[in-house]
Length: 336
Length: 118
Image (cartoon, rainbow over all chains, first blue to last red; front, side):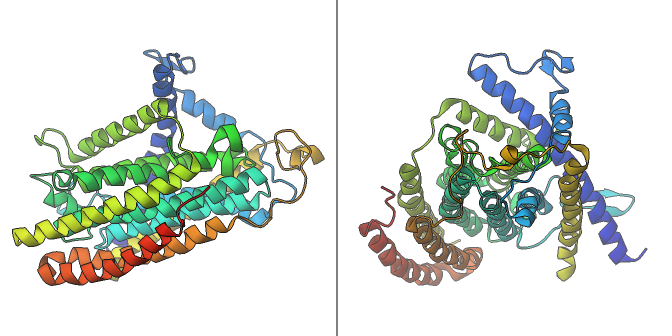
């Protein structure tokens, strides 16, 4: 067969599988979040729809069906085109980040080697940052186009917060790049077969996690949708599947940052004993991160906005710069 | 190699198709009973006044400009970091000078209160 056609067909199959898995993952993440937060708050949580072992296994499907059949209206003074496109942009950029994340070591079946990432590019880290920056557009366009003051305030806050923390997020990865000497995620994972990068970059790891929490607007950085003052932030005027798409984008971004943190700092699909196929280790690491995010949501109060901005610019940025500097000095002194 | 990026293009097509389906599906399946009150912007039940398209605080522009400055700096960091093991001491000194110049600006913004929101 024509090699070009083969590449396209392979990419097509992989993309569809990854998107379906992500959407299923999103659906069950919402259930997991409701259950975890409920237990933290000493409630029971959803346990009625399609009950299996006391867990409402069909709850996400019921939610999805409800969303599909809700009224989908466009506010009178909204900028209609942008209002409709914004949720699509949000979910599209969230999904596209998964094009470069390696899920499993390459497998050879019938003499044909399958790579378990959609695209094996040598600038994967840069690609992730670029796609992460694009995700701001969905939020700011959605908030602006709805012609609602709450939406606008939420979008503005969100944009200022995301760009502020993106600086430190980018810097926190520089240390890893210096240690590994490559931008390819596949190579970064393969280099961690003995020692994880978090051993060399503990501070970078912590800074990355904090900034990533701010990037995806989760507690304690959820000011863009602070429900006690801004109703629902940038998604106030959205209903039906458009609201669901924003929700989807948020949860997929949560999956993405836990996957990036696992891949860059915790060895990705590399497991300690080689007893399970690689993708299981990645999933276990991601689940641990996701549980910690939910735990944080159940525990911490929200920042005040001036505290948030000051923390980003006056604490995290100098820390990330210092981390880069120390890494550089140590590498020079070791003569590596 | 440019062909490495072809799968990303394929994924873009799949994602756009998914988004298009999701965005049109609910307008086909949902009910549609628009009323004047329903289409007004939601302002906690009060009658809405004025447009939401108004001028916004200068602080946001300042943050945007700061972001552009520092983000470009980080883009300079990336190729340097990847090649750092070959550049060694030379790379450290060069980047030290670059960051020092930037830090002067950073300290200036800090002293001028550019990071304060109250």
